[in-house]
Amino acid sequence: MMLRQLVGADLADLRVLWREGLTAFPASFLMTAEEADGTPDASLINGFESGAYWGAFLGDQLVAFAVLRQGGLSRLSHTADLGPFYISAAYQRRGVAKALLTRVLDQARARGLKQVELWVDQENHPARRLYEDAGFRPFGLRPRSVVVEGQPRNDVLMLCPLDNALAADAIPSLARQALD
Image (cartoon, rainbow, N blue to C red; front, side, top):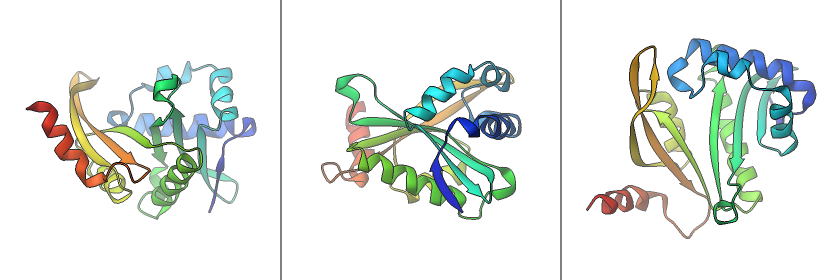
């Protein structure tokens, strides 16, 4: 398996893989397939050039992708959001997700980021386990985060500290303190 940043030549393959995920697992994404189809090529290419898009390849086939978007404002530049993150259904539960997530988090550390945040559908237990195994901890719930086919879905907000200034296991208790 090869893990690398995506480049312009990967655009068509990314669109096919992204559409697969949006169609097969609509509750796992914020966008609809139609919205993703409407995303301009230039926007995706800009993301490739910024180093935000990563892929996992078996041979020359793109089987997974992840997007790591660093905070744009100076006060958020120590953070990044992870997502979308998708592994082709045919390659799930084969270690691809763990390898890609590890690579993306290593890249975030190399950039000097302090934390990576994401949100994941509350019912997506395999993804939640993957993220928890990688050091993410829940810190909140976003009720009715998205509405898919008329049904509201909740998202769990998760954070992975990348430095020693914040212990991952302290995150849930910090979140509870905010409610007191």
